[in-house]
Amino acid sequence: MGTKHIAPVGALLSVIAFLGAPAYAEPPAHTRSLVRPAPAAGTEPTGAEPVGGVRLGGRGLVLPTGVKAPPRTAAKSYVIADADTGEVLAAKDPHGRYLPASTLKALTALTLIPKLDKATRIKPSRNAVNQEGSAVGLVPKPLYTVEDLFKALLLVSGNDSAMALAEANGGLHKTLADMNAEAKRLQALDTVAKTPSGLDKPGQSSSAYDLALIARAGLANPDFRRYISLKTDKFPAPKGYYEIGNHNKLLWRYKGMIGVKNGWTSKALGSFVGAARRGGHTVIVAIMRHEGYFWGDVADLLDWGFTARGKVAPVGHLVDPVPEPAPLPTADAAAQSPAPAAGDADAARPVQTGEESASPAPYLLGAAALAALAWSGHRLRRRLRRTGSQN
Image (cartoon, rainbow, N blue to C red):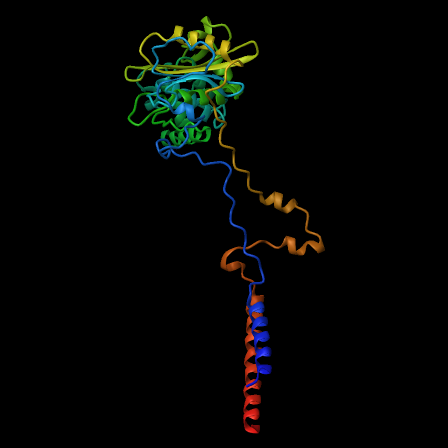
C-alpha cells in the first residue's frame, strides 16, 4: 500500500482526537483560605508561631528594649497591652495555661450577651440557686431579668447567676459549647471552658494573653462595658431590692478604671483582667496565679503601660477575631436578582464540577467520529482489495 493511503488515515485520527477532547475546561482548584482556622486548644502543631507573635511563646519575661522593665509582681503570668492598637507592651509567660477562676465569667458574659434578650424574666432552677462559692443570693422565683443576672455575674461574681444564665441559653452543655466556640473565634486558643462560673474543674484553662483578648472584645460591646463599669446597683429580692457592689476594688482606687473581672480560688490563686482609660488611651492588664493581694501590682502594671504605650516597640499583638463567614444568599435575594440578558445566557448557566459537569457533546462527537472511522476503514479495505486484484 502506498503512502497516499496513510495520510488521510493520520488526518482522520487527528480529527478524532480533537473531537474526543472534552468540550469544557477543568475547573480551577479551590484557593487556599487566607484565614487559617483556629485549632482547638492544645492541638497547635509543634514549632508553630504562638498566637500574637513569636516572642510571646516564651515562659519568662518578654520585655521591650530601651525602657525600664515593668514593676515586679508576684503573678506567675501577665500581659500589658494597648487596647486601642492591640500592641502587647510587655508580658510574662503570656500563653501559660492556668486555672482562670472567675475571670472566666468575662467569656460567659461576652458569649451570652448577644444571645439573650436582657428584658426576659428568668426563674432560676434549684440547681442554679444552690451553686457553691460566691453568689448573689438567687431564689427560685421569677424575680429577675437577664440584665439583672448579668449585673450579678460581673459585679459580685455570682456563680448562681452564671448557672441561671446558662440555663436561659438552653442549658449547661449548649452554653459551654457556645463559650468554647467564642474563644476559638477570638483565637483565645489557651482557653477551655468547663463551667460558666470559673469554678475549678479538670481541663479548664486560660492564659493572660487570652484574658486580654476577651477583655478587648468585651470593651467593644456597649452592654458588657456598661455592666463592668457599675460600682453599685440594686438587685431584686422577694421583698423589694438590695444593693450589690462591684468586687473590682480598682473602680474606686484607680483613676480611669473601666473594670472587667477578678477571680480567686484556692487552686487558681488570684487572677484579674481589667482596663483603664487615661488621656484618650486604654490599657489592658491581665494577671494569673498571683499568690497575694494583687490590687497594688495591677495598678503598678497599668501605670507602666500608660507610660510605655506609644514609646516602645511591641513584643507582640492581640490578634483580631476570626472573620465571620460571608452569609449565603437567601431565597428572597435570589428572587430579587435581575434576570440575565439574552447575550449573557452562557454566564447565567450554573457552573458544575465532577462527573455531573460532563456535557453530552463530547460523547456525541466521539460516537460520530467512530462511525466515520468505521466507514472510512470499510472503504479503505475495499479499495485495497481492488488495488490488490489489479496488481
